[in-house]
Image 1 (cartoon, one colour):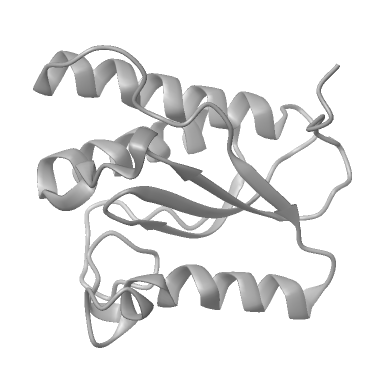
Image 2 (cartoon, helix red, strand yellow; image 1 turned 90 degrees about the horizontal axis):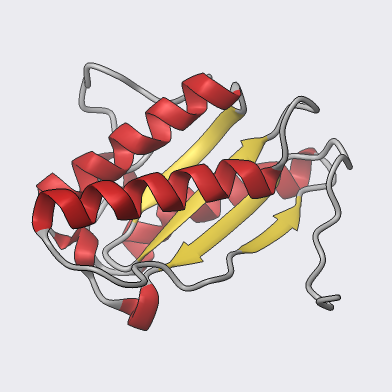
Length: 153
C-alpha cells in the first residue's frame, strides 16, 4: 500500500495542485486553457463539488474545493485529469502521459486556512509575474471579466 494514501471524508475543503508532466507550459495559449476550464465546469456539474477558487497556470492547476460525501477527491481529480488529457490529445494531437501521476492536496481546517488558500490560488499569476493584478488573469476565479460560465458554486 502506498504511503501516500488519501484520507477521504474529513469534510474540510481542500487545496489541490496538479502539474503537467515535465512542467511543460501547455496552458500558455487560450484554446488549451479554455478546454481545461470547460472540463472543470463539466465535472463540477456532474460531481456537484463546491469550487471555491481555481487558477490555470501555464504548467499546473490549483483548485480549492469541497467534495460532497457522494463522491471522492480522487474521483473528481481522475475525471478532470483524464477527460482533459483525452480531449487535449484528440483536439491538439499527441499521446502518452499529460499530467504527473500524482496530485497534492491539503485539507483546509478552518476559515483562516481556507481564506489563505483562496488568496494563494488567486494571487498565483501575480506571484509568477503573469499579471499585475489578480483580477486581470483570465484563467482564474479572481478574474473580473464577465464570462459565459463562472465556476463558483
